[in-house]
Length: 341
Ligand SMILES: [Zn+2]
Picture 1 (cartoon, protein in one colour):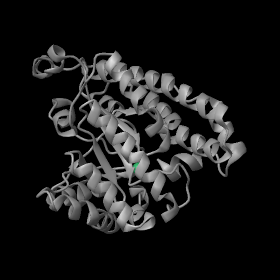
Picture 2 (tube, helix red, strand yellow; picture 1 turned 180 degrees about the vertical axis):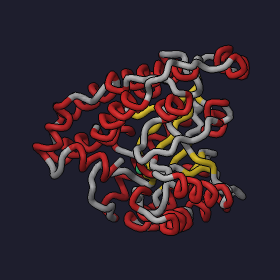
Picture 3 (cartoon, helix red, strand yellow; picture 1 turned 45 degrees about the vertical axis):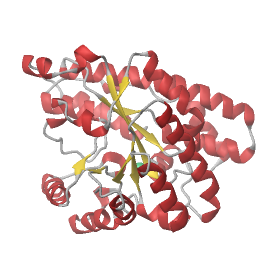
Picture 4 (cartoon, protein in one colour; picture 1 turned 90 degrees about the vertical axis):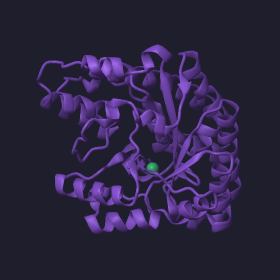
């Protein structure tokens, strides 16, 4: 929340120029107008996003397997070619047998996996060298599991979408990634699922069934609002609707709501494509913004194209979600965003 607020303020200050909608070439290049809206689903923090800032343990194994099973069954049912992003350290924490089994469950039916760095670090806090080490260490299990199917991990997503806060750092890391065969995985919809998942985890621990139901309903309504907000943002910046890249986390909350989340897209006429297909849209060839914040790509495109956006109009999760976290667990929203996302 803090990050987003700061962003809104920054953009309001920086973006004074008039809107410069997408070129006619972009419009004609864009297949989406004839095929309807498109979305790629991505799931972060595999093998399991517990909703707690505490490290995973072997006690999380059964829940983690169940969460991934629920998500993958839903993706298979709706023919959604999802991509999961893995933190190698979480594999070590939950135990290799469980971790590798979860990765294999993604790869075997044809889903894709990408690198989300070893320890889920904030790249803003790392040197270039340590960021490179995080990338190398981050691919140990995914590379091993994917090699069985003669595949290599193709995509990398930075935690918090922090891609290097100075030009020197950004460009050095980008060159290192490219040399290792990676393409950056952006995302266009942030539904604050990590905050809702934190509250959900606490309600689960307390056996608070009324709150669990209330969180699910509120979360789904908020996801619909976020989808509509980011669709409007991207359309305003580009002059057309590029394929969305949905950011979800590997949580119990998302496992429990995945069918309804998918329905939010199908009700709006979306078709599901792979991350690679989404990235073939010209919007994703936009030069990357250097920023120490981790905004969704619509804001980055706005900055590159000098389109003024009032980010303060972006919907926020209701305050009671944060009150529930504060009153039932350690830390406030700032802690939650940084520790889990
Ligand atoms: Zn993450």
